Image (cartoon, one colour):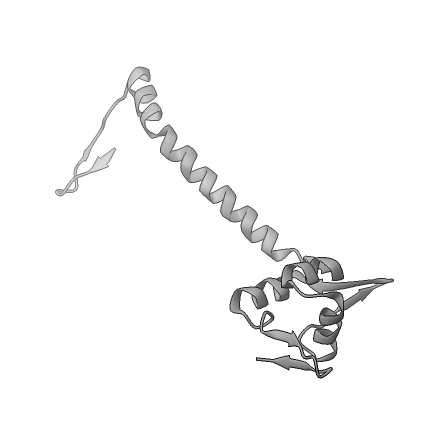
Length: 117
């Protein structure tokens, strides 16, 4: 039933063939919508899970040596998390630092210090 401007209703009856044609017409749109919603839900779920990088992974991502990574920890640029014997770094912190450049500006000085700049 569909309402009209004067408060009256109209009734439409669709045959099975017409209903099938309508479903065929809208099916790709519905499938696309469902796929996009599923991708967004997966993205939000993945973002909610904590992820960590090992020392080697963090150093490789930041393109620094292990001594420079250690100096970054000592300088307070990175905060490791210890799990047993493993040293891990929060992936979100590393990824964000790479994106905004805050972790890529650190360089080991030949003077034996750690420079930011």
